[in-house]
Amino acid sequence: IFVYFLQKDKNPHNEKIKDIYIRTFKSEIYKGKYSEQDEQIRRRININFHLFELLTPDYWSTIGIKDSFDDFLVERHFNNLRCRKKYEFGNVYDFDEEMFTNIWNKYSLTERKTSIDRTTFLLWLYRLNSIIYDIYRYPFISSNHYQWQFRYLFIRDLIQTKMSDFREYFLKDNWNNILNTRFTKEMAKEIRVLDAKDLLNNFFCQISPISALERLLMSFYESFGKKLYEDKLLIECEFCDDYIKYRKGKKYCSLSVEKKDCGKKARNKRYYEKTGGKNLEVYRKT
Image (cartoon, rainbow, N blue to C red):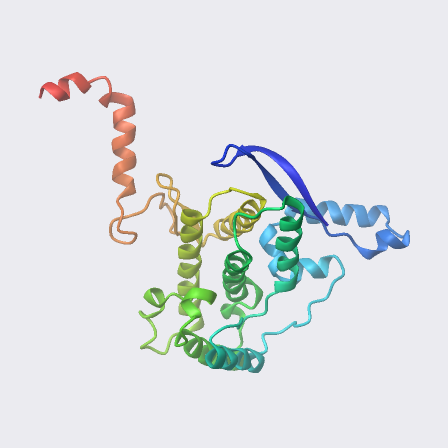
């Protein structure tokens, strides 16, 4: 059920932005068997819910909907990859494209306008879906030795395709550092987190909330960023708000890693706010 709600925020055209709310209900509601215990479960789900979980089977299983695939089936993914190489399009990872296409279609029919085309809308969701697949849905780190050997071969093969950086967001600038070695699943996870960091920063740089469709995308990405922060994988720089890799005690982008010295800029800003403004005339004369 898709609900459109007027927000106080306004877009660049000075129009109110709407939110898209996605509501899911257990089938027992319609059978007259919805109990107080069901209501308590629903409350717990809502309190702890991250929107990005719609891209994982765990959420759907909590409301009684089973996912088609409980395991990472390597052969099926290799088949998807072969189709990609042959036709140069198509998804390699599982993705509920129909559900999100319906959201885009329903919004467009209701509003009679759209500010983001369907292909771009689905692409941003598929990119996020692909990274969630590797970090949370079927994490490298939990693979046993046998499973990891196949995942290892799959990763190497996927990165060599033309579309992997554009669609699945395996950024070669990140992966080239370990491709010449026999990398481990721990190393692969570290690099995939860097892909997530770059995806989040790229998304928030490009997308602004002009319509409910962008607002929905932002909610997905914000919830995913929050999860990575909770798991101490990424943090936000306290000066520029970019996502950076987590390190205990780190607060800002650094010149050695992110090529930006946000710590120095933050210190200069604090100094100016406390002292610099008062001495501005002296500085000018000097």
